[in-house]
Length: 379
Image 1 (cartoon, rainbow, N blue to C red):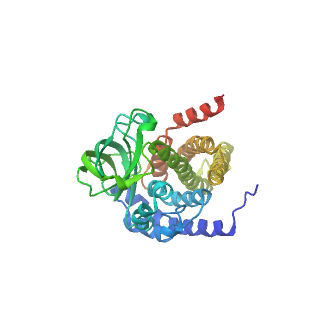
Image 2 (cartoon, rainbow, N blue to C red):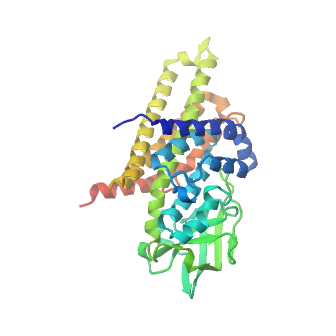
Image 3 (cartoon, rainbow, N blue to C red):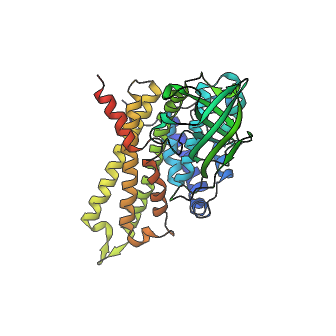
């Protein structure tokens, strides 16, 4: 058990940190305020290998591990949490093609995704199927060499801008075993998009509904066999939960560092805030919780890399804990900053808004508890 990063891990951590500091953080406020999807910055990140961290290298990926990805996403999220989270979702969708696609599909879809010449979206949630994902109603009916797709998807990151949509749909009967996965290009006739959602955070990435009206998708775009879709979606989410947890840690770490600097500089009642024991204790608790969350995330990532049978439970535990801690640390940082923390002139409120949704997406934290409890009580 070695808690030290390898030389290679330190190298790409530093590269990610430099990119976040120089290419993300200076622009993050404007991306948020003006709702800009920063395509140029995303493609620069892809040029460093960050759009395909654990995608195989024959299609342009970096061929690294889930632990490596957690290290990178923490750094990127400290620059712009919303943009880092979109890279996480893009990577999750691309990994599903890499892991479950045949060779023709991999070569057709992945090179433009790992370079971010194309963008990808993960499409599971529906207006009537959120936490109960196995109840999804979007249906694909086989018609010769095509599926005819009808239904809607909700809260899709990248919707309207992404070029590729990895869509879970029903090709069989009710329940999880009736679900399959199709890769749907943006220009598919019958695919349309709803209005852009007005959100609390995550404003540097578009979010909208997908609507399918007799959209014809080639059978050649199906990942795996019919009925494999729910398994594919859940395996994608194991990694997505690690990534979004790392994004929470990155945002919280940035807020912790800002709080420390503020406490050393700000004076009230004739002394620096850093001299008040109540605030010292608050900062100590923030740092401790953050360190514990990072250890849990790294442990779960390693389990996923190792094929550990407990990996799904460990990913759920890490996601539940790290995203709760991430929001709590950002919230405490805002309190330490007082009125300044509430102003958009400072980044604390943006980090707070961006991490709040991490407790909801990739499976709500209540569903994480369901996953953990089912495993604990299995007979």
